[in-house]
Length: 337
Image 1 (cartoon, rainbow, N blue to C red):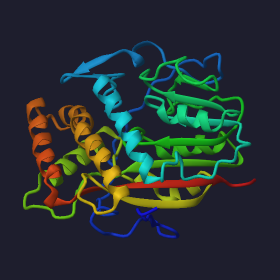
Image 2 (image 1 turned 120 degrees about the vertical axis):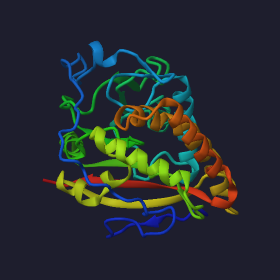
Image 3 (image 1 turned 90 degrees about the vertical axis):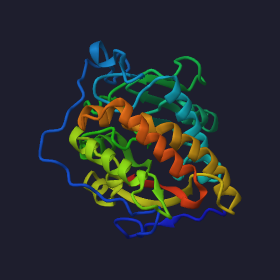
């Protein structure tokens, strides 16, 4: 593969260069974070959602699944999620995961499944496996996938009540989704079989290798981090730290960070493909990631958020700035008791 990963190895964080590892990690505020509400366990022995938590909410021209989660779930966001899925494929040489998943695998859990494309693709590769794909919003199409995929509405911040352990648990693009990552990792460890694998992947904020004075991207990132901190659900890559997983009994076996260009300026053909899709997903996601956070927690006006997003787009689309993002994959194994 021509796009060589940066291996974190024993490091707690990737090396500090332009797009990989240069994001500031803000300090968590002392105020109590918001928490999702729960409901009674479903017939499938998992906790599903009901009532006001799953009602549609409209703000600033976008649709949201509840009053808490900062990302929308409208058609524009579904399209962006599909594009983002396509951007991940060339990063991993067309593979769906960095983890080694044997064909004998029988149970797979995908948390935050979104449109369900990853779960459906895994179902084709592992036809003998039972794949459960969950999300807090029904953007997926129940019954439309292979027979070995089950889609469920479920809140991962509520105690997990699955009756059987999983061989592999997968999460992707969940930055800013949870208030307590230690609790999430504890649930992952609890519901993995001994020796089972867990993979989590996320991308950092947009960075510019050649940052202009008074960069709009820098201002955008700072505002987003501040708002997410006030919401009690920080964004960034801090939740991928090795120590956090190990506290939950998860031994990190792979920790790789890929530098992905936003655009086609790279001479590397693989990076060109990934960069084209990644830039579309990033630009389409600017308003999605910022509208609710900045208007609610920093009291910005909708118009001001949209104006900043347009300025950020101009900087990112300018090939001279060399915009990029860090995409980090962490694979861990449940420690044998």
